[in-house]
Length: 560
Image (tube, rainbow, N blue to C red):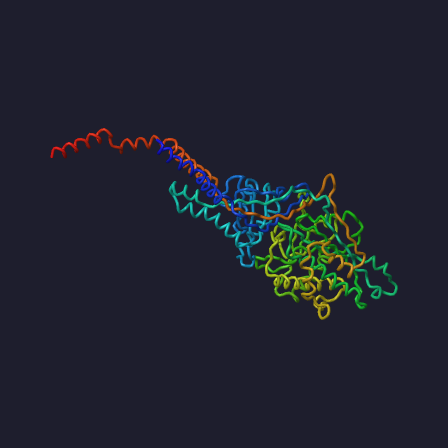
């Protein structure tokens, strides 16, 4: 019995060592150091009481692929190119979070994929999402994680059809936990839309002796408007060709206006705001509300909208003039349209000019084109655009083609518009080539304005307006305190942390294994003495038989 107790002490003495083994196993199974990635939150804003984007920011959920998630406890980690509109409609309502990795290069994608991405962008920008949505720049490590998640949930399932195989795959597979910190999404009480305006005052030297500058103020007005696109699916925008064209026209015509031989028949005004199609042209609306007499003597309003396609996936090469009603013959808009066509025939490389008529839908709170803001006030107006349909997703895309192609197309379009406008204003032949030589439009005129982010950014826009125009003024459209027409939200800089962990079923499996082991050790300690006694009875010889046996052997030896 003492021997059994001594042997049992071996187990008791070894029990702490077992705990060390268990702790080591738990340490190996615990989450490893996280991988950290840059992410950008999806744009969030309100317009006319409608919420766009997500109002949730924090994520702490298990990462799943686009093909394996099923509850709001899962965060979907996938590529933007793999997501469809149908998938997004389901995810934005039922998932726990969505992290989309952007493509390495949009130029490497085929035309069909580019088109699908722009359509998806448009859908994301026009719907409310109940889950936090983030975009991650392309990263090789993040791509490996996405591949691992996708492979685990698709390929392995197809290779192991038996229940045992499925169990082994599930237990042995790696899982990932996604964590994105973020505070509460708070409305920016200082939300505002800047609007800048200026005009070219007629050169006093170009006026007739009987005229004065005051008489020049009575000339008909031509207003040129454009919008800076300050955000898309996230707060960035690669190309602002519309604003670039407006600023180039402003620079060119300021030189013409101060030429003594050029006597303009019109005053030229420029209007630029930070509110485009996504904000329903709120800037021009505010400008019209502030001054009803600003366009009392207007000849026409020329609006620039997507003058160059930043991401083209079609072979169309056209410039469209959009109007709310077809212009009558010999009107100013009709005459300008003819000049525009003549200019395109001479200066473009196969670019055609076409007219598109679309009535204003007063029942729709969102306007199709900016000129509709002015047409509602009965001002003659039109929009020049490279897209034919107001529903084109190209108008809101944040991606772009090769910038050299965009610059070339913008230079071409700028020349056509400038020549047509100069022919109209100065009553010269449309093929007279005014913008040649020193007035030629070059890349250095366009490129500085392509990267504009806002009217207030570095005062670049304000400096240009004050350099070339007079009566420059900046006004702001601020949301009403009680019933705001628009609202922006504060954004926090956040990081995406991805931890590699084992699935929950692995914890259950490990708990069962440890429990069975502990039970085995416990039973061995408790019942080892009895087991030892039973084994001893089977192997130990009888003491009496042994004594008698020895005595009989001795008697035989004595008898001999």
